[in-house]
Amino acid sequence: MAASSSPSLLLPLGSSSRNGPTIKTPRCVSTRVIIASETRDKSCKTNTLSSRREAMLLVLGVSGLSTSCSLAAYAAGLPPEDKPRLCEAECEKELENVPMVTTESGLQYKDIKVGKGPTPPVGFQVAANYVAMVPSGQIFDSSLEKGLPYLFRVGSGQVIKGLDEGLLSMKAGGKRRLYIPGPLAFPKGLVSAPGRPRVAPNSPVVFDVSLEYIPGLESDEE
Image (cartoon, rainbow, N blue to C red; front, side, top):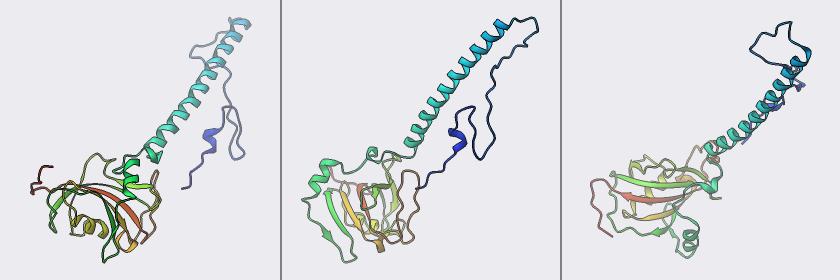
């Protein structure tokens, strides 16, 4: 991802740019009218105080710029390791020993947790949390960051094919990792954004998904 540069914003006051005019800093800034009866010594003191004030403002400005950059990075979703996940480090280790299931379509999955509730019928609305990643593990979308499960009608083409298929064989309360091949993912791909990697057209993706509940269907108590 290319970052746009704004050289004029990085120049210290009083510096000049090759592509722009010189920015001059006034030696003395005051809201009072300086009358002719003021002495030279008093004028020098005023200039000194003003220069100190300008120096302080410059330091505060640089500090504020640093703070705003940090906030911008946080707003962009960085660093990626701070993002919430459905499968943390300990879960990842356990997942290595879970057998892989491959379906006829090419979808592969591993059950992180098998649910005890009902399986959703085609066309039923489901509430699911998900974390979508590129194969390297970098997140490009997540319901956890939005703070609410995603509601949609499963098997109705409202989501990508791999997610539809993977959820239809789950039980409410279950959690699963889906390894979705390109033809079942995003045919047109997804463009990159701050804190989000690019997803190339027809490239494989990985979804961690948790089937929270199925509205209208009661789930058994665990």
